[in-house]
Structures are given as C-alpha cells and as structure tokens.
Image (tube, rainbow, N blue to C red):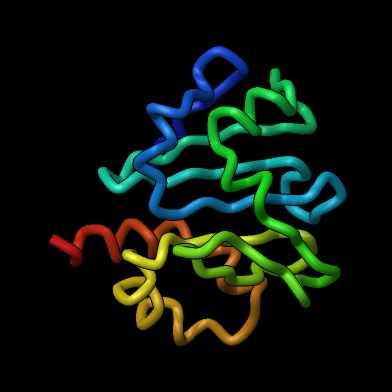
Length: 136
C-alpha cells in the first residue's frame, strides 16, 4: 500500500505540486470522499488533501495548483474540460481523474481492462504508480 502524505493550508504549495503527473478531484457531494484530492507526483509520491473537510482556503488551492481551478466538471463527467496538456478520465459519481499528457500513454494500457468508472476508481492509484515505474 502506498502511504499518503497529508497536505493542509500550510503545506499545499506550488513547488510541491509542480511535479504532479496525476490528480483526482472529488466534488463536494461525490461518493467516496467528498472534497478529496489525490496527487501523484512524477517521483511517485502520493499526496492527499480535502477541500471540504480539510484545512484549506480556496485561494490556497487556486494559487498553488491553478490547474484544478481551470477544470470544469460536467454532470456525470459529460462536457468536462481540462487545460491543454492534460487528459480527463471519469471515475464516476462525482470523482474525476486528470492525467498529464506526458504520462497518459504509459497509463492507458494499464487501465484498459477496467469496464466501469467504479472499477477504475478502485485501481487508478496503483496503476498510476505502475505506469511511472515503467516510464524510466
């Protein structure tokens, strides 16, 4: 199991998040963990934050990781837009995965066997780490 490093208003920094390769965002009413955000950096570290239940101000998120603010999530993921250089994948029920394009080619074949967003929701962190290890 991969250990999560917890982030809060003081440790949620641009320098840390500049290395993000994958991140997931759960809407405030999502199934699973409402407001949960997971980041996997290019060195394989897994970071966790929660903008609903955590110690965060929206300004901190916007300043430190503006890509989240640029994402526009549509109902059930339909019509979702993400910034150039990123690929969107629905994890279902208000959960969204965004993958940096540089990492998507190695990640996509590893997730092809999952038939539903719910299945992928359960395995994406493990598969992201696997894809990072095959990259180098």
